[in-house]
Amino acid sequence: MRNRADKIFTLRIERHNLNLITQIKRPVRKTGFILNVKSNY
Image (cartoon, rainbow, N blue to C red; front, side, top):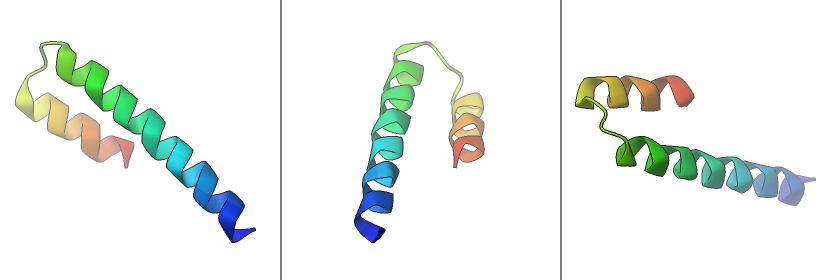
């Protein structure tokens, strides 16, 4: 059970990192970007 939860968690982190990369590629103001990251966690 623990292993399965860890897998789901890593999948979520990978998806989150992909979202971060796409956000960085777009011209985003730094403050808005930081707010986005905080709200995602």
